[in-house]
Image (cartoon, rainbow over all chains, first blue to last red):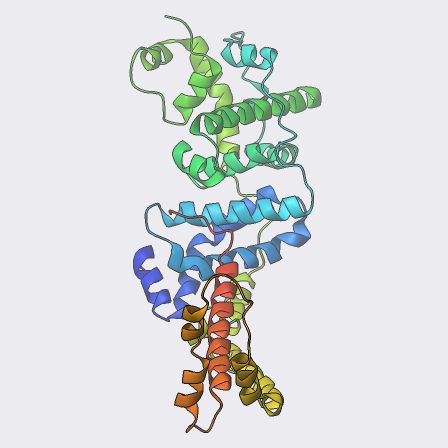
Length: 196
Length: 175
């Protein structure tokens, strides 16, 4: 396994060692694939898009100024390329996010819960089953919710880094993240309550 | 002390709720603890990878394209440059017999500027074509052809840089 840091690798690639890009590719493949998988609805387009993203990263390496983490930069290129693709396909980007209405705001602020002897439905479900249902529910979320959830929970990015990647204000990132998780929790709870 | 609101519970699970009364309350409140526990299966499930994954051949496909594709400016893009410059030289070879630089110079000398109340003498003095003709008289290639060839080379370099710039289009800046 190559232990050179990102900066050394980039310098080496820019000096003409093309094959060193394979090391960077292996390092950031999961990040790109995760984002593409969550942002692009048509599975048949994802592989080509991943290739395009890595080629774009390769061509732009000289522009990377080391002011942020390479992972943030890679995620930004991935995000922008996916957005461009979706715009070309005329997929709605933000239209499906309704502003939080008064009821939702009240719900978020409310301390809702009735203490009970039973655990919540989600706690009783098998983890594998819950993950499978979550994947299905995830596809029904608005695009920014899916993107932010992926960057936060799968890539371990901070609110600030996500704001940089998505070009959204940090407050909006937080708000979308909380709303997305609350929405998912509600849908999953409803799903398992109905099943029960 | 009030119970924590939903957003504060999520902040706590994100590790972003600052130490203080809220966290003290959370540690001692069974109701808030129960609400927190209800989020934990969701947080655990959210770390699961998407079902779709790229083919194992993806890295090799990308590397093959990188090796094949011409990516850099003129100096790194030899085949592209040779083809482009070769095309321009071929165009000159075809068009050279039709060049009549002497005729163009003669026409330029006979140019009559419109009569006005102003003196145009200073402009006539700026006409460098006769001097250029005089300097290039001993050379094998007509001066105008040389100048055009230089301009064409400059055009190739500019086009090449434009292609390189277009390829970088959409890349985030200031990273």
